[in-house]
Image 1 (cartoon, one colour):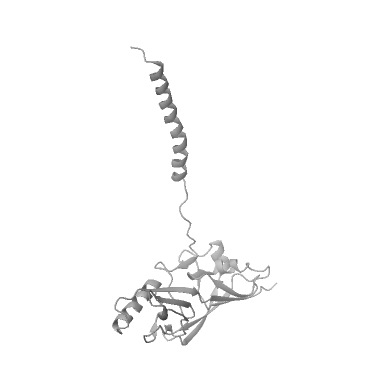
Image 2 (cartoon, helix red, strand yellow):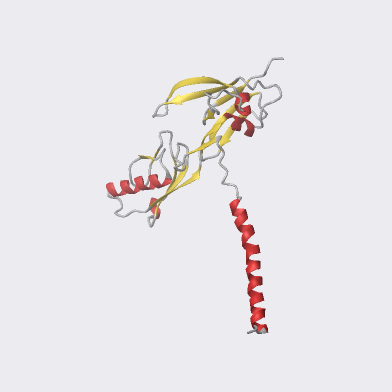
Length: 226
């Protein structure tokens, strides 16, 4: 039996909708298929567990519902702070969540509050500084982003504007001071780094492919002799 014009038109409409939907969906599927993965710079080291509080950080400690217990303070050189109503406590090296848990336990143990809800916020991060001298475009301090633990030397020098034309790139000196747990300096070492080879990837297969720079390091780039 022949289809009615109404049935015929409905079939055509459904067919058109099918093709139209494919035209919209297929480009999206193709874009997702060829989308690049999230880029991670291998020359930057971050703590995979998140930011850890440091000496010099300015923090705000809030006990919810207890306005008189809210304080703003700075973590001292020993990593300690003095919260409201409880004894001094060490927070450096802890994440915000860990610091909150420690403070809650202290308020309970010292019987200040029975069910405290504590929040810790960083209001100002302490500067993590590397110093550059010699044949680099931008001499002086370079400040690491707050969440960065270490950075490859090639990346640090690049961010400082790169080498000058007379830089001796294969003999760069990095001076590093080591400290004990109390923050007292115990030793200082100077390393010689072939930054040119690191940058070009021409090191031998058993050599480290990057040299890590940490806050407090000093980078000295000598001039080459003509």
